[in-house]
Image (cartoon, rainbow, N blue to C red):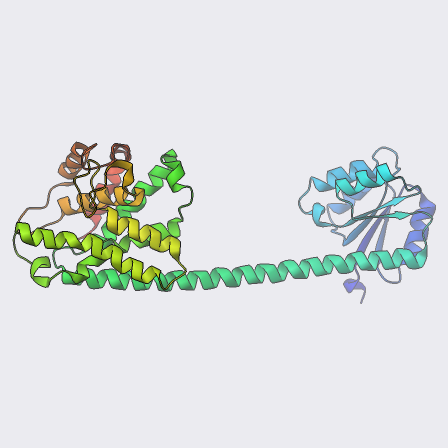
Length: 359
């Protein structure tokens, strides 16, 4: 059918060449003879050809100049261009290929050769389009599968976190809020370009969800301690403190059976580092300063802030303003001074999350 034929533009200032080319190609293609590059660009406003045969030596605008202009247009740049030339010089051929042409055909034309060369180039274009279609389909399939895996992963994490949280009836909503606080801190940290050496390999799709496991070690702590209606004794507090190390141990066991090492690395740093203190007086390892993983230093602020504003049987919930002041007072002792400055910049957003969440 005529409508199924590929469109070929033949651009040449010689009428004889145009007529001859049209006669050769008309049985197989829909041919548009064009006497100049200027007219070609007018035509291209309404027609997108499958291939352009472009003469080099033309007045006003040469084939090279026209080719450079074609390459400036993202749509036209996808159209294959074959140069027509009455001479074959290595320098000019290289120039044309560097500009983006796919081939040279010398004049006068050999009819069978001209048709065959065009058919080959059109076939290559079709194969490229099909390959792109397959690559796009594969990319979309991978994206869908990745989303499914990520959704499943986050669902499992949320379920585990909820399981831990239901054993500790004084921390309702804590996991969700601290994850949102952490995200605020990380976003501002990256925006400011702070600690870039430590964050350059971070994947936020892994880091933020992994925060849900920060208290996973509480699953091994006695209900009598978790649900005590009063302040813990010194012995009970020592037992409670073990949840950080237990959490790291649990995550390491998961890590041994998964390929998601980046995810587990973040989870370990958060679980094991969120109770460490900048001055070295924290637990479980008594790490100091930047020896504490950055994820843990960030989570420490989120975790303490939420504990301050939350109700406990042995204390009233503090206001967001009071919690803000206490975090600032912990600068350089409990918390990383740089991260306290980051917190200060987003404290109003912390307060907004706290007000919008039931606790």
